[in-house]
Image (cartoon, rainbow, N blue to C red; front, side, top):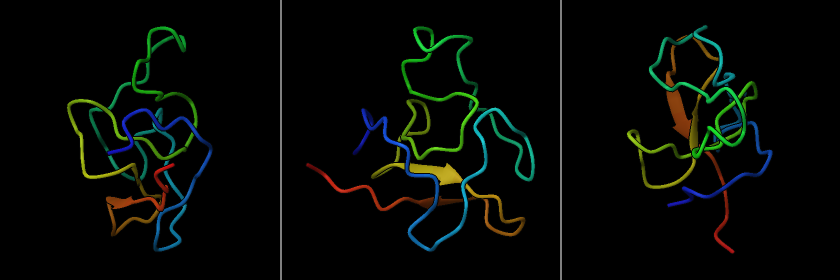
Length: 80
């Protein structure tokens, strides 16, 4: 399910740019990045990379999108 993915893919399968995890715009959310990388077991931070954080676990890595009408989408992260 990609929970350990820590790559730099920053767009969805449909081509939408991901919203930064540290941002509440354009979509408000409850995903809170840790203060340091050590604090953040989910790999969230001041970036817009695809992740699959605990508490919101889905089938594969995903992100909130920068598109106003589309809150989130899956990312095309391949399994090794």
